[in-house]
Image (cartoon, rainbow, N blue to C red; front, side, top):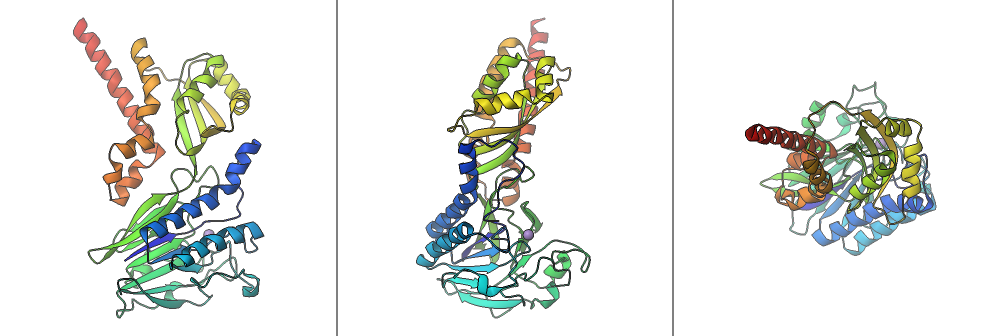
Length: 397
Ligand SMILES: [Mn+2]
């Protein structure tokens, strides 16, 4: 059996934190979440999953606009045409206080009511699945919801919990606070959590965790975003993260001692070969004082924005400067090779090609599909290069 766990689509949410947005970028941002959802549905159909669960906050607000509603309905209809069931709970953003106001969902969709309810289905291979969950009918829920969930239905092959909320002390938090222990005590085969936008595993086996948001919507939501493809393996339900967000928020670090008039060109060349679009917070480490001051007075950011082109696969929305620390410099020729190849070698696509596609362990994949890890690798290799260069020089002497 196979299903998709996604959450926090936040359809209808504008991107936050971008002070300057060229019109070509606005268009990209407006369609990003819808593209992510479309890719999820494509994958669901190709993989012929048994069902899809959406763990709350599919819409960004309790009164989504017509566009957001239509985007979701259209995708759900594609799943309906492929005979794939969809189970949806509403969260604190898209809570339903008036069920009449909801658009007409296709008949393959099951919406959970406010009271914890369990639905049953049978997969194509005749496995039985119980799915328990509830929807928010108000923005805040501080009472204990877990206590209302039944313990595992032992007559079903699988029991899945669908829950939108945050770890916390019952009665203190606003988002259906729960303890990990309370979830564990239900003995479910899988808890599909929503609400937290960071992908997070609270327990590996049986899985309890968040798939995170499907598209990062502000600079705090960095890194790859997507959904979990969940498959049964040896009597366990095992999630594999699949990125689908067409836009990724990243931090890029660059060390350069080029002149101010060369920095924009150098950086643009370095970012020229990205496969998916990136919104970049750029950190420049330099010993050029005029570059540092152009960063402080926002002049360099203005230059990056002015140089941006509609067919770019990146947009630099923020530039921060840092004086370069005294380090052992690479010989000029090595530095030149380093600068011209670093972007080709140290990028996530390259890591994928180098064999990440073979990796099935979610934790390991999460570790490598991460800009921070990439930065650490880059620094480690550069340090090694410097050490070996010094070694070489010693040999010559
Ligand atoms: Mn939420």
